[in-house]
Image 1: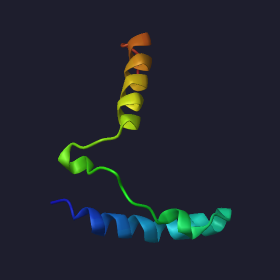
Image 2: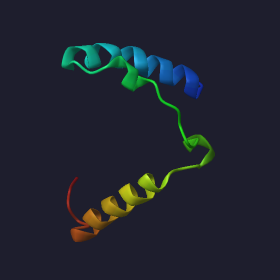
Image 3: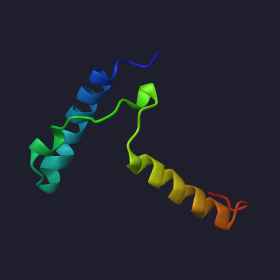
Image 4: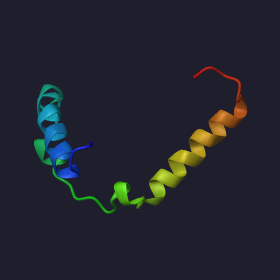
Length: 66
């Protein structure tokens, strides 16, 4: 079973701390709020645009091996 989003987020933040430090990024960038809950099928327009772009690329050559 998939863990709660809070547990997954904290685990991800812990893993990303060293990456951020290595490249000199402010750890405050890891602090954010989410607008939507993807697990409840709530998404921003950014996802719609990303899916449209991916679909467009796929349609260029549907037989391509990705």
